[in-house]
Length: 198
Image (cartoon, rainbow, N blue to C red):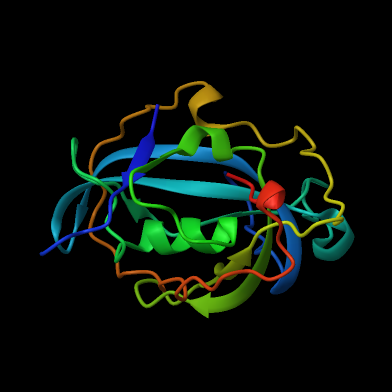
């Protein structure tokens, strides 16, 4: 199971693809994908990504399938075995934004348990420097607020680890341009301690 621990540093498919619409959407995490070791500009890194299913009330449905839209996060580097998550890491900033408050030093975050957790996403349309194709990217995300209603997962999305023929630890992928970084986490207002999602 993927799990990260933060410690404060002291000293030192086929067919035509349809992008999800830009805008603000309620969503639920529907997958955590362990991408295994991947080649990056900084050497080989163990990476993961999250997948979110969007609320059909605001995002609509994919025309070709009638299913809800899904969006993937950028690929996040995981800490090396035995090392804690660094506060400068993209994954640290992403998790802090998602929960609405900073991760405390010494705290473990079992990433697998985030499947099923809600988030409000701000999606933007970007253009890939490598291919020139447009894609939908997660610009920011915030936790579910007190009293907000979110739809349940539809069950249309099948987790990558459960798909036939999926290799849980794929071969390293070619180096790709770095994706946009999430903005620095900001303490969410109107969020009681009981509302913190993880």
